[in-house]
Length: 86
Image 1 (cartoon, helix red, strand yellow):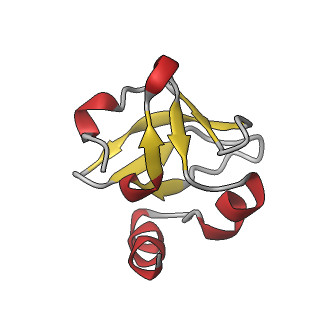
Image 2 (image 1 turned 90 degrees about the vertical axis):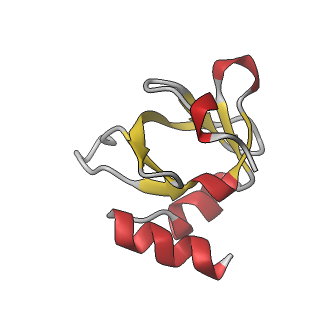
Image 3 (image 1 turned 120 degrees about the vertical axis):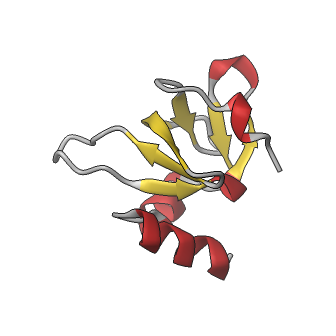
């Protein structure tokens, strides 16, 4: 797993297909990433366990865009439930 210290605020977040879908707002605790608000004004949360690299100043997750949108959480608690399932 990636060291949380490698994740920085404002880093782009990309899918396995290199599609950017968000930017890091900040880390919430040791294992949750809060994303900046999307176009609808909603923050989303993803588990650190999804992150497979931080090369090139980008956070790359082990999900396609459709998987991300299906699995990300609207709050920290939902994110932790999602992480536990995967």
